[in-house]
Image 1 (cartoon, helix red, strand yellow):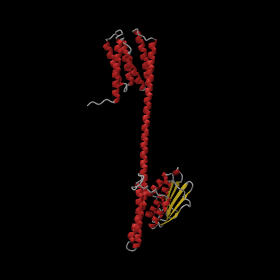
Image 2 (tube, helix red, strand yellow; image 1 turned 90 degrees about the vertical axis):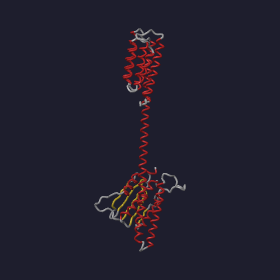
Image 3 (cartoon, one colour; image 1 turned 180 degrees about the vertical axis):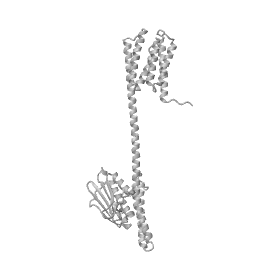
Image 4 (tube, one colour; image 1 turned 120 degrees about the vertical axis):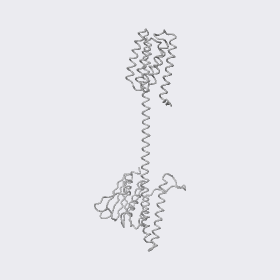
Length: 387
């Protein structure tokens, strides 16, 4: 099955047919009032058709097509055939070569063709007069200018398309980056919420299992703590998983992200897990940017979670300090800490805290405390996130 012509090939084929029809038709009209040439008229028409047919290659080989058409027009003039319309194919070929960027070869070919046309006209006693010379020079200048304008416009359109394509690629890349960042943020939030609450639930479940026979009242209290912790984690998960919606199922606004105003909940939950927690807060608590306020909450949450799960500590102290420029967060415990000489291995909790702090332009350190235990410290910008 033959392949369909491309759009450009179809246009070039139509152009060649149109030029051939106009050139042959015009020459036939001129031949009625002209003296016969040295070849029959039908031979001249064949030459004109051949010149026009060469134009189908004007895109793929513009310079070669131009030279071939100009040579064909000179061959036509050698036999003193009726003149005038035979200049149409050369004009189209020159225009195509200039618009394709072949400026130097086009100008050189045009000058050579013009001089040869004058010489052949003189040979047959048909040298152009002043008016004809001016017309031919103007015709050539129009061809050059028109071809150059077309080339410049084509280059501009190509550049605009490339810029648009680059901008689109940049937008897609930015969209992918934002999606990745959002996935990391959600993963970090889920880790912080689940790790803390499930650690408390696990510890309280162990307590209730151990005391269910010996101290039912204490076991009942542990089960109550499990119920409360599971309820809170479900509420937070529901709020987080509804981040793509503006309201919940009942049409009420979702609860705001947790912040420093909910630190007491973390402390109470940790105390329920048999960890003695003390807190030092600033006397005045200015309103913090949402990202910083959430980061303070998550750092304390994850730090207490690590103390409960890994430190084997009995006490922990949370210190929050706020200056004009920074928010200082410190969580220290009296647990086992890191053995002397052993490298610090950062798990998902420490890595998540570090990434959260770095994301808002802060500083994060974690390591053995002086004497005994482990310390987490973070310095968060109090203003940058609010800008």
